[in-house]
Image 1 (cartoon, rainbow, N blue to C red):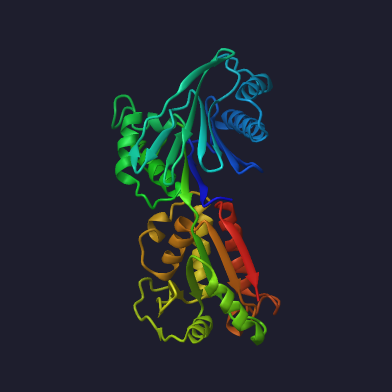
Image 2: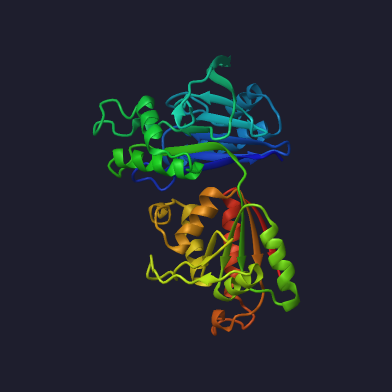
Length: 390
């Protein structure tokens, strides 16, 4: 594992009136430090398009991850999927981004809008070669990547946005590039980039998309470790080893919980400055300890972070709340969702009577459930997670 990682995020909106999306994104990580992303756009919309795009993306991503050639992939897809009776076309359009060792990207494109490469926040053109496979013209590129590079793939719903409303011919690729250069900050994760761009597409459609629209972003970034401590250990003799290990780790340090904060301050030989400013009336204020990046309350705050994490994995509609607010839950969400690549949890198992629900078995611990579910959400975001219990 090198000091870089591949951050992937995508989001879709359905054609107005359709329950299923005709686009599908599939991601497969290889055992050779490679990652394959396939964005497929099925013909038409609804059930048929959903089936076509899902099969296309799964077949291609699996074959590519197993080092099979693009010729074999296209041939297999063409011979596997049914032919559209009206159009005589056998499968959906697709975009493949194959990232190798976080340093090189092979980009393979068939009839989707061309992938945009942002370097230092500015559009960077790259070479493409056209290859004939059967009766299909496939564009192939190989790009040497640098930290901060972002590859943005999209279905054609993006370039059709605004047709007949804001634009005569839709939102052209050059317009999308101009928007990305202005709207996307260098700190944005791939999911945030996808969210911001897709929201703009939806606005151009007037909230009633005329086509399925999908944005998928791949960002090369440096690894950013984050450590989060919550709860004292069940055995008092484990306290010092737990805190020593926590504070010895590289990266940011977040301490959650009143008792935990007091123990951490005592270990560091520092005072706690207790905050009184409620940025959110439902979230306890932030405190400060010298040597700790963020000090917050425990269960209430983490419960809100989990609430945001669930939404992040769905349609990410709450991003405008946590991405700008200054309350403790929003700050933790920004650190875990946007900044962190590797997250270590240090979870004390000491029982807190205030956290027990009388309607549930007495052994049920809300804190444990919150951390378990939050950890799983973060794994689904592509984070490397380690949970240490004490």
